[in-house]
Image (cartoon, rainbow, N blue to C red; front, top):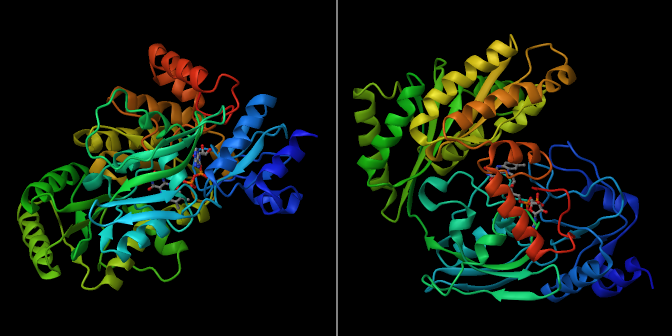
Length: 467
Ligand code: FAD
């Protein structure tokens, strides 16, 4: 029997696709930068089936590309063009196995959509705080495998920080059941950390025990224009100190981003009577009632206005208004798509250095590409800026995007010089492999390669990604 027939046998008639029109959506990444080929998409329905697929592929030396919601930004979830690698979709592992409001935990299978996990937590009056604009389609296994960040890292940490236990199918077909819900457990190495952020190169996450938190009763969102870049970090420090660290999100938005949103996204408009150059979208949340959180926000913003750290402010008066403010932030990537060619960066630097980074990176970009629309935004609260560049008005999109290596090289050099990272939250995938070798030390890359060889000696797990 051929390997393909054996794979079909493992997952049963509902567990595979091979007709080109059915496999096509699995073979192109979110940004349409990569297109791959595969003889088979397998869609197992249990951890045991995942393990059996891996055991067979290990024996036969067949490459396996895990895929969750396929919203990743670095081409990590699509196969190469050889047509030799199988695509392993986790989307049928959809069970919430357990929610425990006393332990503040939820046990979810890899294919649960992030929003479903948030909802299951909310049903028992708890919060699962991981939140990103792709939450309606990205899956928890993908979130953990990319160590996703998002808009609440400032308060709750990255995906990695939200995990108590994991179940992983290893390349040799073993299932490691590490589904513990212990808050303290120092029995040797913390093995789960190996698989978090590994982008499917070491094994397949099939389920996880995730941390829950009290669900906020009061939540207040505000959009605040600030006089300059330097004011952003001072305002952040004030908000943290004066609110007793109630702040959950602190997002930077440059005016150019808002102009693109107003132009390209229907139903959006400027909440202020005049334009400003720099804005912060912030959110505070607490178990205390709405009115109390509102009073804290008003007091902190009042002080910031007096100190010259804020120029104005709109505080959302309802959930609907808060959603409108968030829409301005979350539709920036879509607006940039409409505006033509875009060179994207996902950098992080120490929070205090964000203003200097923005200043210098803008100079570099404008020096290299006259007329470029510098449109940075992102999670300033954790030092993560999407330093995105939109093509000059009327320029040729392809010619602009062809400048990526030249421009990104200098932006990444700048981040490195500021003790920063060229990949804050999106990972390495196919897109940033060269940068990994350029900016990480030889010792680090070698250690990663040794771990990979140990766990995946036949090299079947997501070949051509990360390393
Ligand atoms: P996929 O894209 O399917 O896979 C990502 C990687 O994980 C691949 O390497 C894949 O092989 C591997 N993988 C998937 N599932 C498993 C598994 N079960 N076991 C082992 N490996 C697996 N990211 C952020 O961090 N923060 C943001 O704020 C953010 N905002 C976004 C906004 C938009 C509009 C979009 C489109 C994307 C955004 N992203 C963001 C990127 C993306 O949503 C995240 O990287 C997300 O975590 C990917 O999840 P996914 O299920 O789509 O994974």
